[in-house]
Image (cartoon, rainbow, N blue to C red; front, side):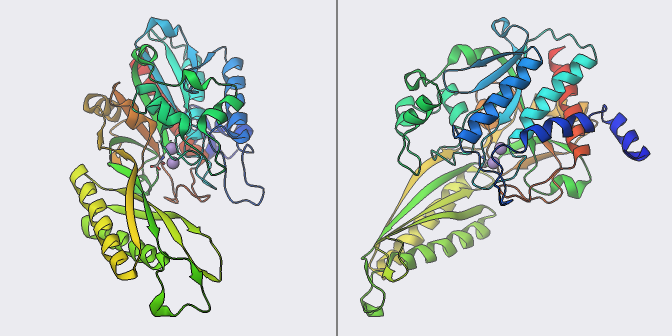
Length: 415
Ligand code: HGY
Ligand code: MN
Ligand code: MN
């Protein structure tokens, strides 16, 4: 290591090497063999391997591991029953072929922050825990923040049990296979009441910190966001023999809706994305019979989001009228705006030497928790600004700085 790097490491609490050492043990799990990112769907073999990794790491640190009734993991330093706990953590699961950092960075940083607190001789007067929430991305069962929504009662357990993955396997079956009891799913107010504060550290999913030349930031708010399924039906037919004028092609309606979503989002300062589409029968030489397209929409405030989604719905319906198809739009999830606890946010920003405070368009378990517990988030600089894709990045030095920042925050809150 160069002298400059050693100086930086000391400034970061000596954390670059411990970070890399721990990170390298997690990195191979769920990594695409062709180099196309990470695939760690909730309760898949890769996710279960990450959870085993968590248990090993926690046990090696003499932290007591518990799995709650919704499959969320907690590693405790101190007695959880004492209450008013300070909890940090994030999630292991990924989007299809996502980056390495979205989620796991918060868990690794939490474990390393506890190491640092012990090295400092800190003696917490409140229990401290690192959490790993289940199925945050919703990539397998369609509902984001599944574990934290179930814990807080934001998701009905009957609805959750019936959710299916792309193979038609229900969540109930998947968690049974993973050794959990699906009948136990549901709100857990007693466990929630033990938590006095929650702080999630996360890779930044944009370039704001890079532009500000700051390694760590604090979250102010999460944009309201949601997912809508646009189901378009037409008439399946032969691609070679059906006259253009006679077609009722749902792909045309879908294509128009994709462009309309982009335009309406731009007009309102929001974001709208169609990143997933299913075509029936999905044949090269057939006019499709049906298309389903998933719209992910986000905006700075609830009214703007409602207006954006309604505009997309109206424009898809108008186009369907012209195409001889029918289009219906169904909400699959909606998360209103989240404003993080302002007292906690300001305290953290000051503690971290005036760290930048910024909003995000990405959803997090912290957003779900914030309706029940004073909650804050820390962001670690991402020089590419890319997320939900393999190019997501953070330097080891910034990750180590994130660990120090998190340790400072946990020490401030718990000691
Ligand atoms: O999709 C999201 O906003 C988050 O990354 N789960
Ligand atoms: Mn994500
Ligand atoms: Mn995440």
